[in-house]
Length: 235
Image 1 (cartoon, rainbow, N blue to C red):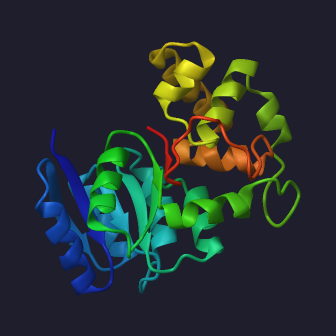
Image 2 (image 1 turned 180 degrees about the vertical axis):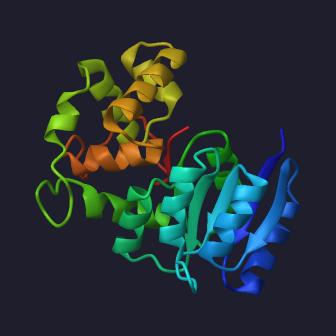
Image 3 (image 1 turned 120 degrees about the horizontal axis):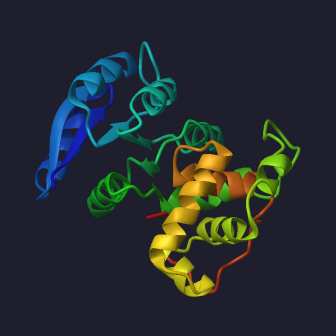
């Protein structure tokens, strides 16, 4: 299956570089480019790509505003925020908007390709450079800043669903979660789908954010068998 991609960045040279990297990969096709959020909304409506690579700071409509619209209006097109600006507020806003990934523009080409493939397959991925910043921004901060109280929502989950969410947030893959809980991988996927539905979330990356916001998982906790690369993958 070919993965279709739309590139959104106000710098033509950045788009050209992204196109060069992705077009050289088998099974990936760049189907369009846009220079701001408004153009992106129109282009995605016409092309319905699998993945949208979205810059943050752009004229007319920024990437975060466009991402919120795209997630709501075109859930089949997964958004990856790609930016040079790694401030915590951008990470938090992007994840709360429901994007499926967050990468810095300095990420190596192979990581960009991996992200596109992972997100197109229904997973999520955070750049290793921002994973710890995400944890610091969300983890163990109940009642602080603008983080909502998640107590009632967390209580709506069954004990097994809570276990699955906890391990997901600690960086384990579906296969690792299944092994840890002595479940089939299909059962894990079912539990994760129910978690998303009950919590009103649109992506598994948002589920990770929820786990930290609610205090279910805190900084420094490890799953003893998760990925040591620092990349938060949620396939």
